[in-house]
Image 1 (cartoon, helix red, strand yellow):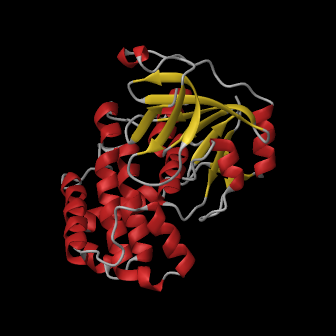
Image 2 (spheres, helix red, strand yellow):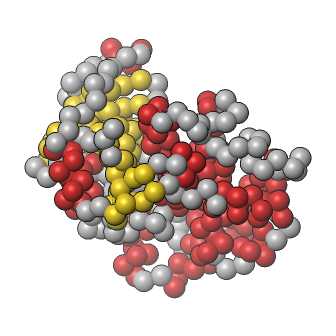
Length: 302
């Protein structure tokens, strides 16, 4: 099977989500490190304009967003499952709960530390999160929201279960775990805030111990070579939207919550939770870039 190539940087909480998926499944994968800030020329050549990480490349197919990556890994490598309790639908939906949890942590980080960030980094993050007033964060509210989310986890673990869905780890654990992972390391006072949640702390250690599979270092040029030597998988356009979003139509796909960049291409894949566009670049050749529908806006351009 074609190599899994992850374009990422380890400090990203969203990268950590995918690393734990790879850990659960025990997969070998190739690591291409991308910068935390622009310029990200190699990544943009591959995606067509999307700057966020992680991005999973499998041959000439490029998968955007940890929720779409989870779907692809589960399809290609179904065991061990990311859904040990069988509740895939509600677990995929919980990505939005995890995003709310993340936003509470992000607000705490901005309110407590952003004045100490290098000016270039702060400016970049302000552009990435235009809905957040970096100078007017309500830190008390952010703390209250962090406590509420952490309380949900503590409550779920109250019966002694090892993981949120029972005895085996799954995607729901991964969704939730990355928030305490990044806030404990970067936000002053979070360890004290979380101190009453002893079950959560033990659970964090169990999730961290899942590891990341087997990492093999890789260069961007080798990743491009893999794309050029491959062809995208066959795709289809289906569902009620196929009347207005026909195959071959030029579309633009953008995140609906951040400014991570827009991707334009010809529509080749469509269902209730996928949009895939075909595009070409001299470095990577012809690729298909796959997005989830949840959290992404699709705009016809012709």
